[in-house]
Image 1: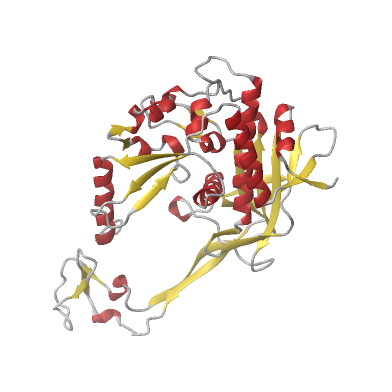
Image 2: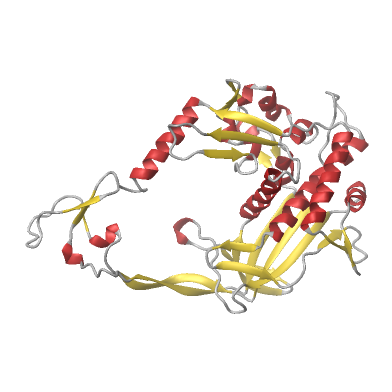
Length: 399
């Protein structure tokens, strides 16, 4: 079966029918070629996320290369880029941290905040001096559920695509909760752990006996006065290497993996989006036409995020750049008795699809807020200022 271009009509027909999902499975090799080592993310205690998976009748040792959460972040940042560039119109919450007291100005949007519209950053910010959760926009989060997703659609539609749980709001764990409609993950197959080396050769050849040195609160250091007899041990003594002078003895430790290939699996659940209802004008019930328009728009936003993120490449982190071994293609999981239809969706087409779907949703009467500007509360601003000051003068665990 040949590959067709995915269009708005394709998505609308799939959503209106009984199709379960759209799936994109892509294989990769390390950019350095087969056998080149890749470095997965590390978790608490420096551990890698390894596990055995049942794949095509075999038990295969695997290592996680990019988690569901990380992939979602990459898709949202790809959407943020095109929104900033004016290529796509999507609602977003924005908090600006930009005062003279701060060492570094910041801007945080609902595309970047971990909990999207329900994040504590927005909870602890204000609109015209009123706490966000007490404003018309913020109260939306107290009202929405799967049978009334309309207000959240207008305020932060990406929350309906990538998931949201309002666990930090006034209702705690009973707050609004929407499952992820799009899931993506990258895994290395037939993973064999290797080793890594570390060392530092100091051009000055500073000797350990030239110390000790004493660290100051401002990040500088001083020499002690006990050299060369070194009879006195003063509290706070450090070797020169602890202020980055001197050699670091070469060491070998576990690090990195070789893999047969990496596989990225992205699934957009049409079934999950089909559960959402979108009543208008305070009505308790919704109409099929409005529901369809909203669901198609959300599907198009998810598809755009996935396509744009893929187009940016898979340079996941230092020493973990991957390159696809084939084209990106989406399979429509509809009728199990026939092979899935296959569609292409390059970035330009994805942006067109999303723009058309959003336009149709707005024409159906669905709300669309564009940008909501917030101001950090005095407490949040001071908390950030203190944190920035600490970052300049200290490191975790000591001065």
